Length: 229
Image (cartoon, helix red, strand yellow):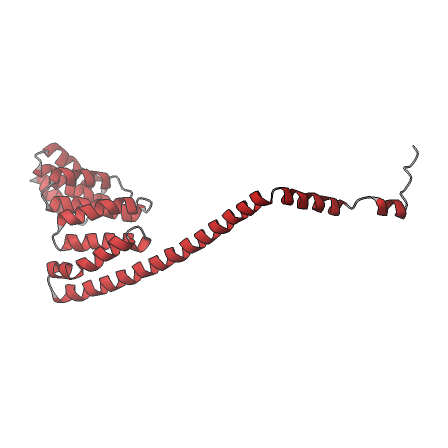
């Protein structure tokens, strides 16, 4: 097979350079579509600025919420040591309402909401605590440990209001948690709640589960006493 003759240097110099050709085409395309390209670049720059600004203000909001939460907690601890829970609640309610109104959707705002719910509960403000706890269920739905604590808190709050039917609903939910301590507590409360509702069989069933599955439960002797009685 005959070899293809090599091109001379003079012939090679006459051929268009590939890089120059591609660059020329690109420049030509950009010239033909300069308005669209300018518009697209403008959008990208604007989005970058918006994202950067959002992150800046988001971080600043979190820091402010954190600072206000720290102040509120310090204030509550001070008054809690010197006064009754209701008085301490009165002293810090405005502080926590401010955090929730301005930063309720932030991480520290969600922590403040749950903290304030506990303060309300301790002060006997059960309806307000229930409202806050229900919002916290959504806030911490991706955090099982905290979520279960909130479920239990709702059960306790309804129990304090003598709304036994709703208390049962939350303690039943908690009785299926993998946490053995929380499950034992939930069954113990279910035993008592079912008894108050006149559902004796369900009450015994809850207590029997404690005896068979939770021998190390702190109130196991009391449960056995109730069962034998």
